Length: 207
Image 1 (cartoon, helix red, strand yellow):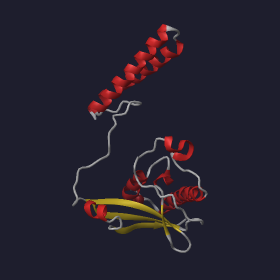
Image 2 (tube, one colour; image 1 turned 60 degrees about the vertical axis):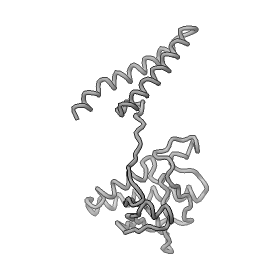
Image 3 (cartoon, rainbow, N blue to C red; image 1 turned 90 degrees about the horizontal axis):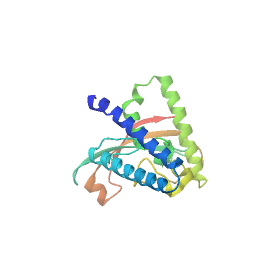
Image 4 (cartoon, helix red, strand yellow; image 1 turned 180 degrees about the vertical axis):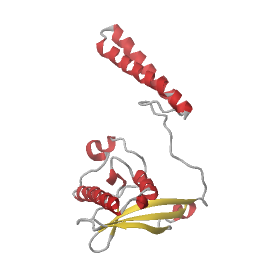
């Protein structure tokens, strides 16, 4: 906590200096503008490299941290999955961009840590909000439209996570319920057979 507080001022100064270099580029002309651009480029490269090496985030320069873990074929993984349920009782896996601008993993954490502690009234409010998000995304996907980070820039967008499965098939009718499952699998087993996992219902909500 002390280290984080101590870094606040240098990070602010770094950002202000970055803005100053940008302003200098904007107001410069001729050879001086070329020098200003070169200095700005060098500063961006140096600051971004320093953030990556030290693993200290210095917005807008990222530390390029990767969310990874070490494991092997016997590693047991626990995950959560969200499904919409249509009138016939069929389940439809919800695309991770359904909850944009947050991502699947953020909602997973919230459901796991906070949903059960809400009052019935608060759970009802949360249910209505989640239903609205899920059905808006369902309608867009069924109509062949893009959702979330892909909505405007398509493949040029910068999503919350890369290389995670997308679930673009959607029901033609609104969902009547949402189900949250806890998924468990062993790395080696699911690598050999993608259907080799178990799931346990955490919660089912209806509007």
